[in-house]
Image 1 (cartoon, rainbow, N blue to C red):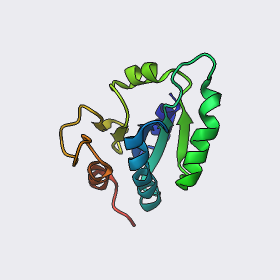
Image 2 (cartoon, rainbow, N blue to C red):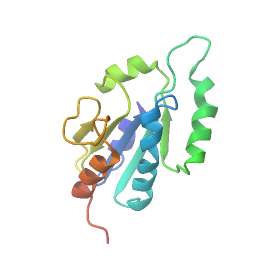
Image 3 (cartoon, one colour):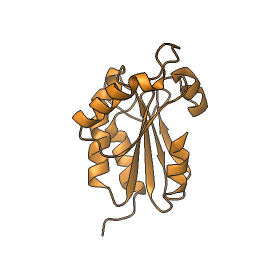
Length: 148
């Protein structure tokens, strides 16, 4: 996964990796908050989008989803780093240690995972979802170096 290289290349910065899909309504509802986080903390935080649209259907390779993903990113004015999964979503979920998306991984300035927000997260959130970007943003604000 290319996100690992981004984390390693960002020493001293908080890294937020958002795993999502254009077929996931909660993902698309929360995605604009990743864009807001990216814009607000662009000097202190590296935001990474990881699209899990590829489901593994032979007749629909990863490239099949690229146009849809890019259209969504453009509609949200997302200028952050984006990766498109090249392995089936279920395989990607297994490697990430999640059951489903949305999922957000926040790495501290030391490059270590500070928190995984996913369906197993029990620390907050409102409504039906186990977390929202309110939870993610609160953690990022604690971890990010002070703005100059």
